[in-house]
Length: 178
Image (cartoon, rainbow, N blue to C red; front, top):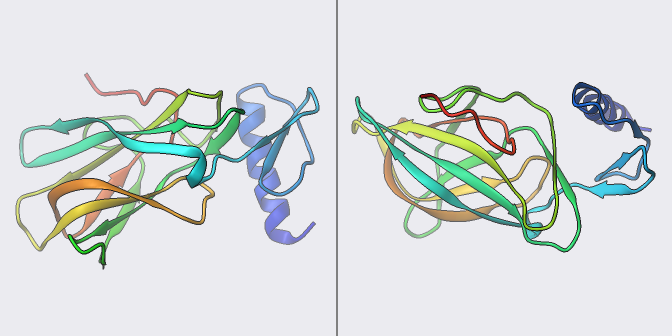
């Protein structure tokens, strides 16, 4: 195995141990459960990505709950944080900075393995401020699923101060602050 593959395998094994799943070595891009079947990583084309809910709040905070729904006929796996980026109305990339962890709306569930059966969804919470301070007019939000190499652009239509987005790790349910 290459150094990068070993690091990836150790991270996946650690996450699996934390949720009580035994893993064995598998082909790149898959997670193999103790039962012996490989679980492929959910790719961008495997998922329907949208805002399940848009969130507003005081003090110029805004955000939303991203939903990454398995649109395949097989189980796939996600682990980690989605990549995010802003686009203007012409789908040109805007300068963006992403901060991983808890947001104004939700506690970070932590970096762990999420298995999605067909039709099941994972969530991640995204938050930003929109006071107009060095704001980027984000017409679209680029969402790259964890471990994927491509993204899907979804409508955003909001100003994002400094182009800064905060995002939680994916989970079956993101723990929303009450």
